[in-house]
Each structure stands twice: as C-alpha cells, then as structure tokens.
Length: 143
Figure 1 (cartoon, rainbow, N blue to C red):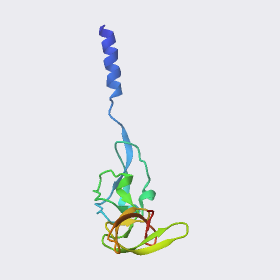
Figure 2 (figure 1 turned 90 degrees about the vertical axis):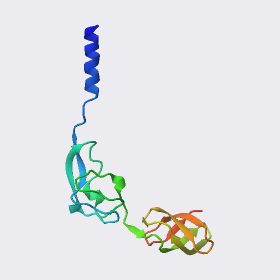
Figure 3 (figure 1 turned 30 degrees about the vertical axis):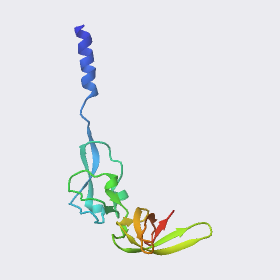
Figure 4 (figure 1 turned 120 degrees about the horizontal axis):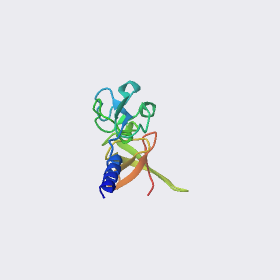
C-alpha cells in the first residue's frame, strides 16, 4: 500500500508543475486609453503564462482601449481600431434595404472605430438605435 500511495502522490505532483516562461508582449511605457500604439511602444518579454498569441506588428497603429502599464503583459482585447466617432458627436445614421435608403442625423452615445457597434440617438425621433461604424464615420443601422 505504501508504494501505491507514493506513486499516486508523485503523479499528482507532476500534474501541478508551475508553468514555464513564455514570450509575452509588454508595453515599454505607460500607454493611456485612446493613445495610438507604435512598434517602439511594445517589446517581447519572457514571463510566466501562455505563449504569445499575436505579434507587435498586429498591434501597431491600433488604439489602446484601456490604460496599459509598462512591463505588464497585454491581451489582444486591450486594443482596437482607432476611434472615428467620438462620444456626443453628430453622425449620419444610414438604413438601407433592397430598394430604400434613409439617412438622418444622430448623436453618438459612445466612441468607436471602424466596424465597432455603437449606440446612437436618432435626433428626429429621439429613439436609441444600434449600428456599425463605417470608415467614413457614418453609422449603418440594420433594423
């Protein structure tokens, strides 16, 4: 019985080994939310954790979605497309079906970049709608 317990104990210890070091992306300086990130703002550093899921080239030119502290690992979700629409900005709301296109003005309730989903108040009807930001800053509504 002693040998069986020892083998089980050794197998249990092996299953809970500490993870090894892996390459992780970290900022070289503190980056504020809303700042555009450049290649020299990031470096690869060995830290405990998972492997590097993206490269600095994938992040360069994107906007920081939250404050990023120097030396702390970052996630892909910490970055997004640069904002085209700012909060409270007047934007063009566009609805298009097969034969009909309607355009009106709205006020953005948040900020967003190309492809982001954004809530907007229609200034004519005062109703809140949700749409996707286009490259020209217009918000396309699907319903």
